[in-house]
Image (cartoon, rainbow, N blue to C red; front, side, top):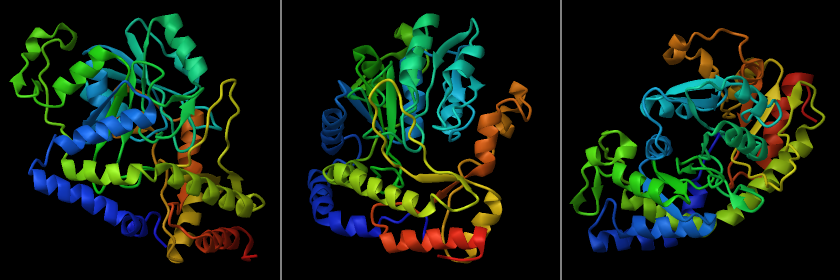
Length: 382
């Protein structure tokens, strides 16, 4: 049983997908063309964003958003120590400095109090990451940012469909991003990403940066744009085949989100009394209205690595989130962190594991996974 599989999803969606793909071939524009524009309009409509700017990956979306928001060499950006590497490497690629803070143990999101403790005179932005299932505490983080005159740049790569008081993830600050990596809630056939923002100038600059400094057919002289400090653009255009796939799948996104919620409930019901499974996905109650969207189903478990081997031996795929916290990654060793600096992030890295989770997963497969987990801890399956 794989950790992720979307073969059946594509079989069901293929008539719609093939129609969009044939349209791409008929027009003969395979990159940064009409289908990309259609997707941008559709995603803007779904999220309520004033601007949706398509790029070639979620990582590039973060890098270009940071640059378009004015993050410059020497600036510091506060990021959580528990996240995918791109949350921090995007800051470095924007030629700024990531500054790590700890997470809330229940939501795995950036902890506002920890973030406040690492703010310096060089801090320019705070980057919450909406991880796995729910959004970070945007009320607390926005107050923190306002008190210190900071930008809020959201790593909302996993958060399509999540909203805060009705506002879609990525639109509660300067901007946010979406990743359309194949495993994501809305996944392409390869890499693709999107910048979301309500800021006209950020959208304009991001559009320039993704296309070698071009706006349409015209070369825009990047050195003349003061907000970018003379930094040139790059090639981060989305290709129209990925846009065609995403347009077709977007129509069924809400149904896919509902199916994910049902599968998560099935897992929770079957695992709630298994000894050794010490934390199931916890939806933190916030003062503001927010909705969970299950991108993955992550639990904390005793003897996590042994459990993974046990499941692998039974043909069950898993994903460890994340083996090494960001502050202890070799690429950030120059920042001088040591084990123990961010205990909640480090504990999560030692104990979290994602179980097989995708809309086509039958509930009988959930039973199989949960029986195998129970067998590991108790020696029995029922």
